[in-house]
Image 1 (cartoon, rainbow, N blue to C red):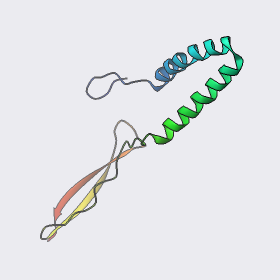
Image 2 (image 1 turned 120 degrees about the horizontal axis):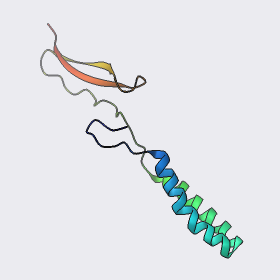
Image 3 (image 1 turned 90 degrees about the vertical axis):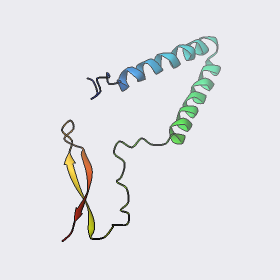
Image 4 (image 1 turned 30 degrees about the horizontal axis):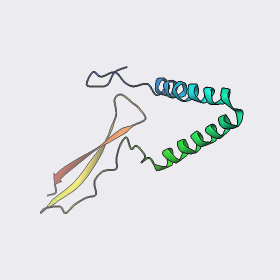
Length: 101
C-alpha cells in the first residue's frame, strides 16, 4: 500500500518484528550468562516500556474541530460530516460559513 503522496505505508508488524529481534538478541545473551540477570533485565525492560508508553502523548488521527469563534455580522458557522472514501469507518468534518438571511 502507499499513501496519497506516493510514499509506501509503514507496516506496524514489520516494526514490531524488528524491535523484538533488536531487544531479544541482547536479552538472550544476558540469559545465557546468568538466569538471574536475564530475569532482572526482562523486568527492567518491561518497566521501561510501560513507562515510555504512559508518558508518550496519544496520537489523534482526526483532531476535534476548532471551537466556534465570534461570527461577524449575520453569518452562522455550520459543518458537514463527509465520509472518507478510503475508510468507511471514518469521517471528516468540513466547516462552512453561510450567510443567514
